[in-house]
Length: 558
Image 1 (cartoon, rainbow, N blue to C red):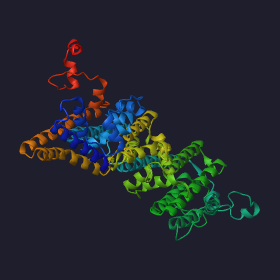
Image 2: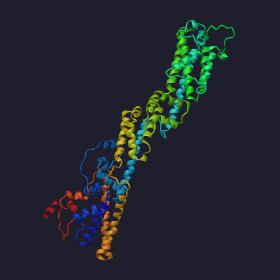
Image 3: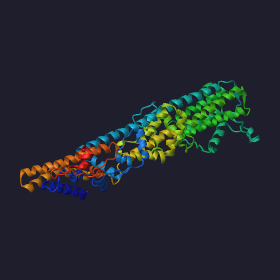
Image 4: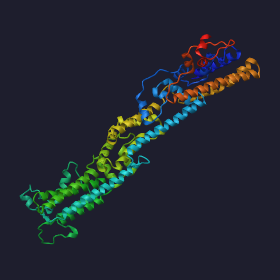
């Protein structure tokens, strides 16, 4: 870094001295070339210095990210378009002020516009994710949107199955009392009889022998424990306000109103289990087994009544089973059911629900997120505003704060589309939408600084800028030293200022080209593209650029 800057400064001093002592014609092509290139102090990286001295003119195939940037409306510099280290180094030097204030303004204006274009492209993807149905302030808001709607849908489902049970239990007919009481002494004669034991015993045995056993405990599952006591009352047909048999009464049958009353008593215990997940699961098991016992009895000839009653009861049971499968936890390993339970019971905050939806540090990294997405898509509907909110919140979380740096944003998008988040990305977004996200990631990477092309600390760029501004003062000092007069000092300052001004204008022109996506050629390179005409005029040579204004005939005559 220091060597490049020192060489440039030494070259400027030599140029100034030669101009002052008359050994170099200031208007010659060599003087113009040396003045502009010495005045153009570049980034201290070697690639940048080579690019500044020699120019880059080689054409390259257009990279895919260029077309993607154009589709997204994101401008690219020449270095970014070609991924050329030399051009990128030169652009970094301009951005850091090493090549003059004018070039720096051009570079910084470009960077501001480019960042805004990337932000706009990301916002377009976000808007498409929300389908114009939602506009979340933050991704956590998706948790609140989902909670509100799922609770409404769950309440509708509850009302539905309860209404179906009401319809079923309003039918005419009666169950054999043995369905509740058991056959008593007949058990010794027919031990294989399904109704040898009372309903409380049959339900308890079924709970213990289930694939996911329910162990009823007075401490851990107090509501379920009390429900077993209620079943003992049902065994004796004590059904509360609807009546129970008196001493010596013979019960001919239990009508469906009595069955409904028994079930309502169990449901009351279930409501009392709120806040205790283990107790809730145990109570659901008790109610499920109660319903199973009643339906089995009706199917096995233990019911005298209309077929409509059995059909209505089946419909009610199916509606209840569907509700349970959708909104409640089915066993300890049902992670999706646990999330749905949290939503229904309001045991989690919107922020916590958003974390369940998207996972932890990486969106979609947790497999539970994918399964929760599948469940919510079925519950909410793939065209619903709530599903759109989940999509938009996912994109907001994937993109993250852009101020953290473009490389990190691109990495998060890549991980979501192609890494651990891939399954969730495929659940939430179409092929075209994921393609646009990938294009944005590619463009963001193309705009990020590459290793070896940027002066991260900007110390080299600042030093180069400082040396550039010192050229005029150095020239003035040399002029004064060579002539020992104020006139010499003025001449030196003039030459130094001229070199600085010429280089600054040249660099600004290059900056406009580079940040418009065009590959510039140095003045030295242009001078080499034309032959040197020599026009004698009092032993002085005119600069080559004059050639374009001199008729060919006149030039040949010379």
